Length: 135
Image 1: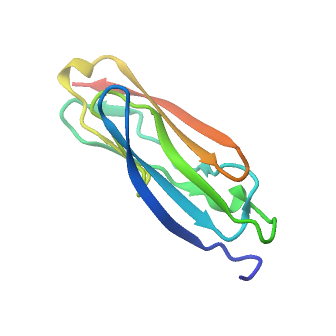
Image 2: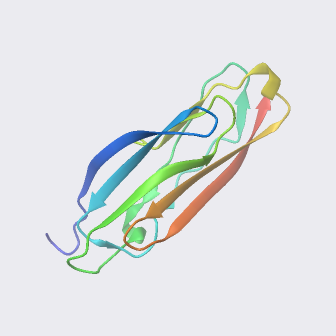
């Protein structure tokens, strides 16, 4: 592979049951270079949501900044939801949070947290944000 090239391959996704009886998808990616740090999110989440209206946020990552040059060492990372409001879902394949706020969530800030974790570098980066729900 050319030293400047970045080639990513989706390896697998599988559900993980949560303590509350829900399920989340865990996704794994592999690339040909080594990973210096967990990838940073470069997209900004919407911070206002309306009751009964879809809330959609796709996380976009700065992969160039995350992938160092340690030839011959591959790396994996996975993206996981750490905290989501009731009813929110995280699609690990597309790195998208979707949610439709319920009436009882109006007027209360709802907390979100997503993390990327590198397996070969043992690094973790979390992104947290809050969303105000309006009627």
